[in-house]
Length: 376
Image 1: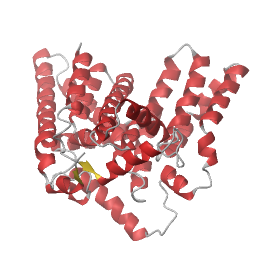
Image 2 (image 1 turned 180 degrees about the vertical axis):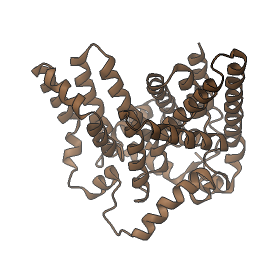
Image 3 (image 1 turned 90 degrees about the vertical axis):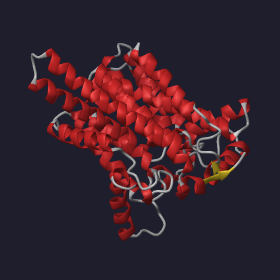
Image 4 (image 1 turned 180 degrees about the horizontal axis):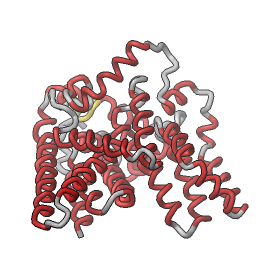
């Protein structure tokens, strides 16, 4: 029941007031809209191919930039649902609900879903751990192998995902080898065939430096180590102190994350380091570190690539806070319920603050008005 209410609330939040927030379209959105319109189903540069195909189909229904924003909003909700199932399997249903409330109402998430570009695809990195979970619990291993090959092949077209894929291979190398070893030959052949077919456009563009640069995040042009270090230094400043250094996620000098979310990220990091021996803990920290390093390389990899992993850290932070409180009062139901109520109250205040910042403050900020200037 709560999950259904959460889903409805998510749809209302991401689809609310499309004409007023932010009030216009950016040059990047208009340029991408024109690109989707003039291209066939297989563009010359297949970066973000799965999102591009979804956008292309949607424009046959309604040829407007607003359609792309609506589709991205719905894709954002899909990413929330996938994240819910990952956290539910790694933590508890209560923690997954609490975390997803913070995720849905985060100003950063809402701004991302209100952007008519393929940037929304970066929220789907959470599919990698979800595939691992599904392969562990499903009884349909033959089908799972083929579907996993298909999904991974599609994900590789999204910027930076190739590094998460490689991290996933290292993370579950033994399990993957075991699965391939005990699967029927026809299932392995089918999975490999599907994987190769999906990656045909990838292979055809393998010599295109622009394509490889976009996929890997590596800039093959002029590289400045000083600029790289500055990018790495500015990122945490934007997240936790002042977002004024980042145009798209500029929230008027405020940090991207509020104080409560910041505390949860710190607590989650401490909690996950303590559980370093668990493979999932190593995967989260390593993939987050990889995405952080990619951000330093420049504009090919947007900040939002880190958001799914930061949300997973928040779930670990909530789990740690709740565990600490229940450990102090193991047999006192009144104290336990009081602690849960305090955490729920903090989540509510954080959510209200972030939603207000998105719907009321963000559209009227000078940085927003400077970017979203084009009317359709």
